[in-house]
Image 1: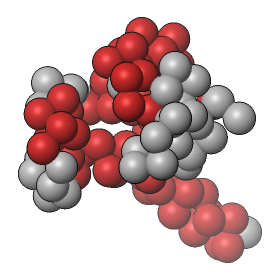
Image 2: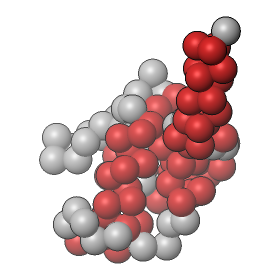
Image 3: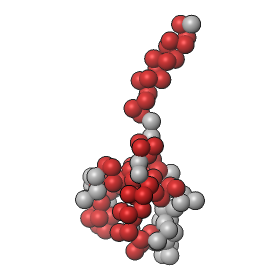
Length: 102
């Protein structure tokens, strides 16, 4: 019985760490993705090999990279400029949208 209480305790502590994309809005992400389509393609498949495909990519990875671009931790002049206006919610929505495209 002690084991169950410990398990429950650790589970409740870990809830905030669950991937934020569970609460993300895919439709809002799709609306925001219009700005991304020029390079990354309408459905997240780029026509230029210089730009990565985003369709089906892991949402956590996409969120992290967009935050890195926005915060200047990852450098690309186009991405740094475009991501400056994105909120954390926008980023999570975009990541959820692109990861939903399989």
